[in-house]
Image (cartoon, rainbow, N blue to C red; front, side, top):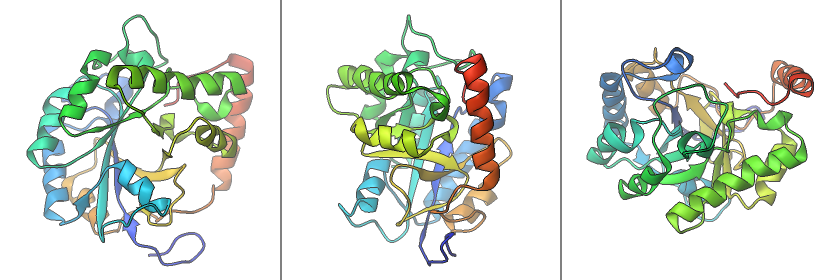
Length: 271
């Protein structure tokens, strides 16, 4: 397979999950996987023979700080839904699968607010439990805003504050970031670097690779309709383009539209 520049590059599947539940709220239903399907996905990953790694290991490889396994795979979870520190983490641990959890601090911290609509969420006090399961913790902003539409001050807050909150509860540095809904720009990526993040994941619904951009690592967004056969194809390096590649004209146009809308209506939910 080739990237946008035509160079041959090995594919790295980085899967993006949200909630794992049977009866999700309607707003997140498309991106919620049923528990029985999730177990089938995990079994397909194990059967593929790929080596599971965290995003920190992938980022280190992209930065030249460590060799990647020949056939790596990474699992990520966004937002911090209630199933994560329970049955979802149990299923991962039972298969010795590490993962990276990106948490929206405004949605999991009592007394704070986010732009996420109502849903069953974990709590900030449960974050250390995730590390006990072997999960890596990353930041997913305070409010889940569209970062590429924010003025500099608001962008800084969305990047800086969740790190502090998570670092306070964990007692160590948190250096990995997920852009809400994958929305980012050159300016957002520069800001993430300036705030001390070592990596940032986007979406793009593409396979990553050993030459991907460490500040917009491509992920495959897992939808309710995806089956174990889809996962098997991704594990085989098929079924999606391979990053890195440039933004398409529709992506650029959509960003301009969203920035204009945000200038008129203010910050809105990235979803």
